[in-house]
Structure formats: C-alpha cells, structure tokens
Image (cartoon, rainbow, N blue to C red):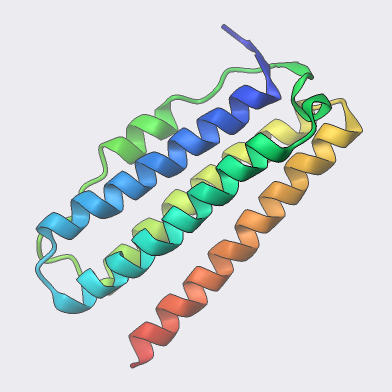
Length: 151
C-alpha cells in the first residue's frame, strides 16, 4: 500500500524509536566494558525522553496536521535494520557512538525524504519542526557522549 496519512509516518517514527530503545537495552545485556555500559545507560535514558516527546507530539498535534494523504511507501527496511542490530560483547564507546549516529541519521534521512511529498504547508512545517527538534536533540546527545568520553 502506497497511500498513507501523515499520522502513519508519526506512528512508524515512534516504532523506529521504540526499536532503537530496545537495541540499547539488548546491548546493555551483552556489553562487557564499563564505559560502554555507561554510554548505553545514557542513551537509554535519552531515548525514553525522545519516545515520550514523540508520543506527546502525536497526541497533542491538531488533527488537520495528520489528515493529509500522500503517495509513498513507508520504509520497513529501516525497522528491520534497527531490530537486527547487535553489538559485540567487547563493543567500546566509539562503536556505540558510531551506531547511534548511523541510526539517527537514517531516521532523519527517511523523514526528510517524505517532506517533498507533503503538499499541505501546515503539515510540512510541523514535520520540518519535528525533524529540526530531533536533529537538535541528537546534537545534544552527541555533546553529552563527547563529555562522557573526555572524563
């Protein structure tokens, strides 16, 4: 099915972020290095906050934001990619940072690919604000990880 409402994009985004949280939690169970575990605890906490933000955004947004239909496939491959991610037990903080950046970049690229398909200016602006907010949060998380790495 190619035709989707914008609400389905938000629901898929929440699913992607929930899968990312599950990846961090799975990784905590196998990672042996203490610094890497510290990074994963930090990322888990930040991901929970992000998931709550996304849920709140979906609930509190005006209905007119999501009523628009557009023609595109929702990329399920990204979800499969995140769900099958696994860290080696000896993964270090650099590996975790690299994977986190890659996952966040793929999600952001997917959202940006949808922007040109949206013809409703209000919905487009709402999605762009969400993308910018997520990008800013990613930058804050990255700075936090860099500070942790400096310690």
